[in-house]
Image 1: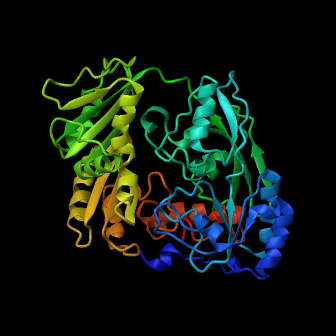
Image 2: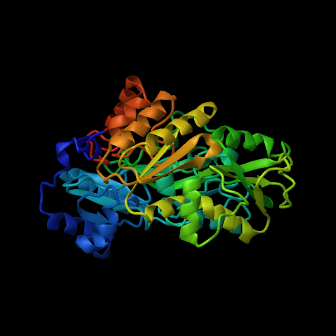
Image 3: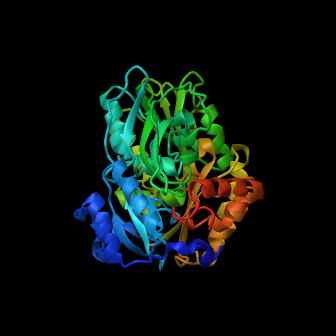
Length: 467
């Protein structure tokens, strides 16, 4: 992995041929002058991602408020040969939602596309704008007596369009699946301004390609997602949450089945290591939650009526604490959900998000700990994640932001176990040079062909996924 690969813009049309002022005036006529930003101070939050490792440059930021305005912006940019970087909540960690250094691209923010349709009680579906936050979608569904199945710590910042663009997972994948499984319709705009809209939500519709699935995980390289028709679920009943000490990843994985009664639904299975637990406790001003220290702490959430009856497989010697009411469950969840923030509090942190086949998770996690723990410049690290779906998060503090050696070592280790270099946040620019570790040359060629068909001039988020 090299800096050139991380922030490579391989299409010469990304440079603006006309003065920025002319482009600003043209876009202002489409979206209104208040929604075209050229002041560097106002643009700052749009050109650096949440990790603070990936920062770039842009000619301006444009904030359309309707699908028609998105189409107009893209037509104008295409006519001028200007690259466009679609951006939602900008909570990514791989440089996929911010422009490259030295670019003259336009950042297109979808945050104003935050409309909500009525929840359809017959189908259990709802159509929402791409700029609606995940948390607002959850609350909108809950108010109508339904549940949206995707959840993650950045729920009040991450947008639905962004979660679709990266096929986000989060904490309840074991129960409801990734974002792709929640999509029953999509509306998006291609680089030339063509609007593709298929929001009927029919579950039986075998009329050709599933365009929604193609946009899911596309990271803004095919077009701009403007609205999504989402599948909802019946509300989750009362739950119980348990934190359980474990000595190894093998034991942690075994707890997913041995500790949980087979008659109840497992909603979440998470694992956090001792270093991360200590940092989270320090950040939140809380104490170590268990009677003893353990190398790992497993969090299990089950739907069991809220009386802990779902944890029938715990032996008498287990070091465990169970939360039944909402406040106690939130306290226990905070140890896991504060991991990213806790490591960020140390300074700029390398944050890698990978996955491996579940039967190989324990061996891979142990090897990763050895690699990272022995890396000369790593001062503090954590290996934690979503236990039930093989998703490992590796946080490392110490190496310089542009020191990519330890990142590459982690990704190559994951590849040896047949894993993926990205489980949730996408490939972005950060991992574009390592895509070949988990996708074949034939697969990459097929993906490039799709991009070439939909974005023939290469203006949509150049440098992302493919480098």
